[in-house]
Length: 96
View (cartoon, rainbow, N blue to C red):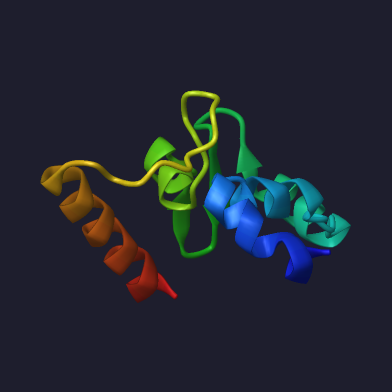
């Protein structure tokens, strides 16, 4: 179905929304339980052998999650936001 309708979805601006709505997230119970064991409710962070880590609002935004409750699908409209987006994407790529 995607191969037939993808150009129309992109033109209408709903391509990403459709792909996201059909994406199946597979739960890895061992990973979830492993992370839960590392959680410290006192500091609201994960305590690993190499140090402490937490998920920040910036982490959510870098990965495309909204901190305001709405999905992020709009393109950057100002030079400042384009530069900020480019800097964040570069930092994300360096982590991988």
